[in-house]
Length: 147
Image 1: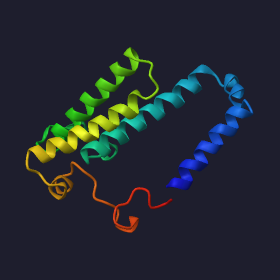
Image 2: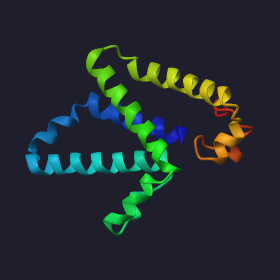
Image 3: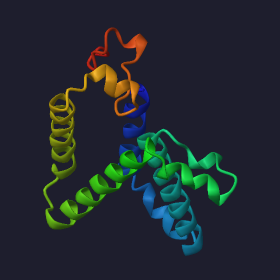
């Protein structure tokens, strides 16, 4: 995962340094907009799937979307929409480059304080789908184990 992230970063850096983005002007507007809209849809669908645990890419009929109104996924996607809205308005209001990292740090802190104030343990939050379990191969859940 770390190597993939670094590799993608290096590719983007090389593309920028060699100014290869100028070739995008040769693509027609419908092609560029189609690629952007497909990517936007996919990112939105995957973000929704990650936050709720329900993937709508497997839905076959409109009534399948009613699963999002059930007690399990409903508060999760409402919280996702609320956080995304706050980030959107904060980015439009402030041009500070650390707006999103600050939001993530404060949001994580507020979330953990909130579950502890409710008397919910981290294991219970993981069991109910509010937190991801620590990966088994990470060596005890140390996020800096790759260093």
